[in-house]
Image (cartoon, rainbow, N blue to C red; front, side, top):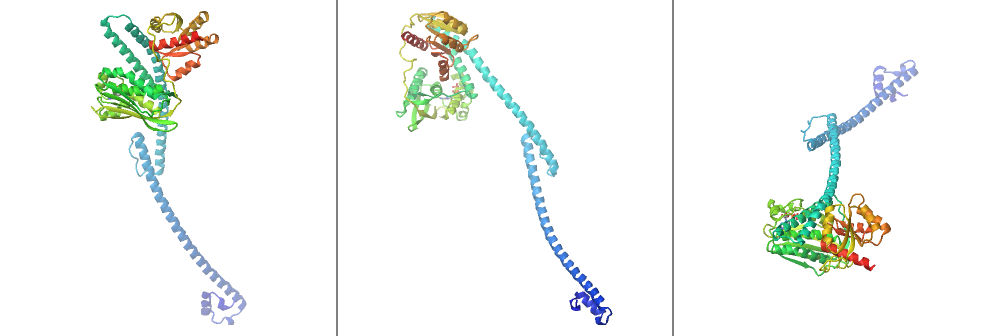
Length: 512
Ligand code: ADP
């Protein structure tokens, strides 16, 4: 290594301390020494430079880490604040407890949150239990009502039947008013029971709407006719306007639709004195398959104060406390109407103000159906003297008063009546004796009407069997026909209707 290549510090020191290197002994050894020293100076410089650079790098990384840590700290503080806010909302919503301390650390907040979660689980468990209990209670209520209805309706049928008999038998003029009170009260009681049952049935989701073709205009005419007498009694004029565009046949549940409209019309008649009540059926829209009809019932009666308007659709609610006293009713009709219309995909609307009359209306979309014949076996003229040609009739019912009522009414129609108190007795009687017709109750002990009919059909397929049932809807009709019965009559029965049914089956049997 030449001296010019030495490290600059070494060069300076050699120049200072060793003026003439050439004069020094053992030049070679000294050169080696100096070279080694120079190299170590150089590598010291490199190390210094390197560590300086490393220090610079470490400093910027440190700055970055510091920045991130600060950011994380901020986020953490914000999260804790949010967590505290959430815990406070939870505590207030569930237990109304006070806010938690804002300076709590994360661990304490986690503990609190754990407690809240436990509390929430307990509440959920309690809620689940409450739902189970409520469902049990609802089921018990439905069962209770269905059992009670049967138990109440049976004797009530007898009361209504007996009243009918008393009315038709010779009685003193002084008894006239008592009989009329008896008749109205027992019929009202029956209506009330039917309303409660209906409401319960709809409320528990057990009501299935039927789909059959019917003539809506015909249904409206019948409703008008049925309410005409009550309207006249209050000095009202009851009018019906049916749109010419209304199709002659639509599909739906005519009995339930009739119940809805009847309820609106009878309310309008009830709450109006010496005024006009008008029923309108207007076609709003129609195409090849569907028609939307607006049915409205407008009256000039007492009207409903605005603050009461919303409440009248709630069950057991009447517009005023004096309403029941003055007009009777249960406050269930509109609640049922609202629920039935909801099932039909419609809703009831009302416009009314106190003293200005009321208009109740709804729009219903119905599928247009095949045409139907308006004639039913229950219409047409009735024989002046009821005579069933000495027909041999077997009446089966477990309740003695039902048998007494029935025999008092049909016993006058020239028949030979035999009675049985359960299905088992009926089957034995039919096996051993000739009958022209059987009137069969459905619910009976020992053997019910359904089973008895099945047994009779095993050996006699011709004998007309007419079921006596409390419900006369389409599903009951289908059920009794599927059992092999020929027809059914509602309880309490209308003597004229029952006479027509018996006569038509007896005539058909004779012709067969
Ligand atoms: P109800 O007629 O058996 O009392 P509703 O549910 O049918 O029960 O009617 C509830 C209440 O709404 C009635 O009690 C009456 O106060 C009011 N209301 C219903 N229809 C009319 C009407 N057309 N005019 C005046 N008030 C009515």
